[in-house]
Length: 86
Image (spheres, helix red, strand yellow):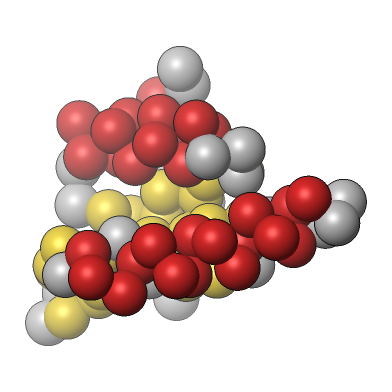
């Protein structure tokens, strides 16, 4: 599992991460996935539209997305069900 691949949690909000280092991390995650490891990506997300875009991208990479709401970044509540639907 990796947290904060495309978004970072800062001051109660989701901040997009500069994509320069993301490719190297994705390559490492793909390597793990190719070795039959389950890869879960959880990012802090502010709203449903952002969550759906995040889920689409992560699924296209072959990983399992968890669009964790910024209001529950400590995982004290799950993401809303509509955030996870395709």
